[in-house]
Structures are given as C-alpha cells and as structure tokens.
Length: 319
Ligand code: UDP
Ligand code: MG
Image (tube, rainbow, N blue to C red):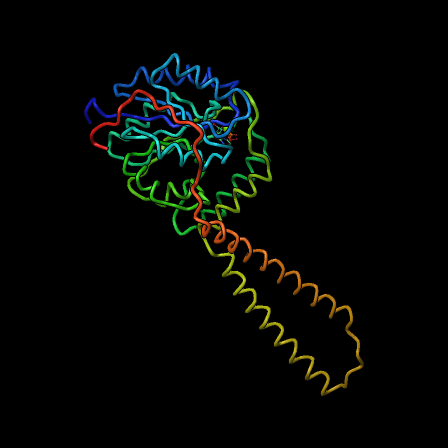
C-alpha cells in the first residue's frame, strides 16, 4: 500500500449532539496518528436535536469532515447504506458516534486491511453497561441466526468494522429495502477477519434500541436470510395430518366396535382451538414474508438526501 491510499470514517448519527464533540476529538487524535489520508463522513439520520449544527461546527474546524444529511430518520441500517454510497476512501470504517466503539482500534483495523483483508470486524469481548436481559436476548439472537442462516454470522459483532473498496462496492450492489447489515456484511464473502475489543458503555444520551425495536430487528434478520419458518409449517402440517389420520382411524374403529355414545366435546374444542391457533400463527409468518415482498416490489429509493457537504478529500485514482 502506498501513502496515497485513503480512508473514510463513516459515522451514522441520530440525536448525538451531546457526544459528538468528545467523539470527534478522540477520533481526530487517532486519525492524526495514521499515515494515510482520512476523512470523516457524518451521516445525520434525521436528528431532531442539535446534531446537525454540531456536525456543521466540526466541519468549520476540521476540513476532513463531510456531512450527509438525510431527509428524515431512516434508521441506522439505511444511514450506513447512504454513507457507503458517498464514502470516498479506498477503505471505509463504520463506527458508532456514542463512543461505544473505541476509535483507538482503527489503526488495528487498518493494519489488517493492509495485510489484505476485505472485511475487518471488531468483536466485543464483553458488554459493560448493558442489562443482563439485553445480553441474554442478544446471545439468544446470535444462536438462532447462526443456525438459521446458511452461512456463519460472527457472534457479538456489531457494525464497527473496516470494509475495503471492493467490499463497499459489493454492498452497494445489494438493493434490498430490508437491510439486515450484519448478515449482508457476511454474505458478500471475500477475506474477513475479526479483532477482539472491549465495548464501553454509552458516553452520553440514550440508546435508540428498545426491546420492541430489537424484536423487529431479530425478525428482520431471520426473514431476510432464511425461509426456515415457512418450511416449519410444511413439517408441522405433515405431522398433524399424520396424527389426525391415526386418531380418525381410532374413532372409526371404536364406533364400529362399541357404537357411539356422542361424547367428546372437550377433546373437540381442544383440537379445534389448537389447529386454529397453529393456522393463525403460520398465516402470520406467511404475512411477514409477503409484507417484505410488498416493500421490495415498490422499488422505492433507500433514502432521500436533504444536504451533502463533502469533505476536502479527493477520491483517489484507484477507485
Ligand atoms: N443511529 C442512527 N439512526 C437511528 C438510530 C441510531 O444513525 O435511527 C446511530 C446512532 O447515532 C449511533 C449508532 O447508530 O451512532 C448506534 O445507535 P445506538 O447507540 O442507539 O445503538 P446501540 O449501541 O444501543 O446498539
Ligand atoms: Mg450505542
């Protein structure tokens, strides 16, 4: 690698005004120590606080700062996609603005990139400042997705990672509206490796994730990478049909041998309610997939841009 290679730090921002100055200070110190040209692209994901002004202020002081403001809050996954579309560097590092991902790890990510890796992800060794319930649900989620997807998604890995230019271009070719980034990062393949790090508690402000959002995120992960739930309906249906056939045979034989005293209201109710429940459940699962097909079929753009003020870094010739 020559000195002329460039690096873009991509930071999705949603209501992080409190943290941004501290974050930028730490990040800038790290970038000063790197022997390659770097810029920082803050993607304002429709913040409702003073984040936009904070980024503009940083841009006044530091020519490496670029601002991409989306027209409203689209969610982190889309904000990252928008950032990747506008990142100029030969490699892109995605990092959270809340200082949970330490910027000090960036030189290690870059070193692995120079060794020839296309995706260098940071794997957290522990999760300070997060409740046991969040840890437990996160753990369960990784287990499920690990078994459901046909390829391995690294566990305890967030979006903090470095992507080479060809990895970025590969991600940009994935057009889906429902972007489960953790899965997409792995799906593209190429040479990938991980670096362990210690995840710190949030610097300031509130996490935007509540359990409802996490649940939807998990649903997204499962439905966008596996049709296993649909197959489950087939097998369960087959099993129930088999049991029903055996039970039917038993009733017919019983009636022939002993007559029919017409009882069995409780068992009738139990069977009807059970089957009704199972059917509704699987109609719901079908609906999840159909709803996603509906969203994709509209072919809407992923995001809309309110303003784009690039950094001074020029795109290197190799890209
Ligand atoms: N974020 C975003 N759009 C959103 C929610 C979050 O761009 O709709 C950004 C947020 O500003 C932060 C990163 O995504 O830089 C991670 O968000 P958060 O800290 O809330 O998630 P957690 O660390 O709890 O997973
Ligand atoms: Mg966070």
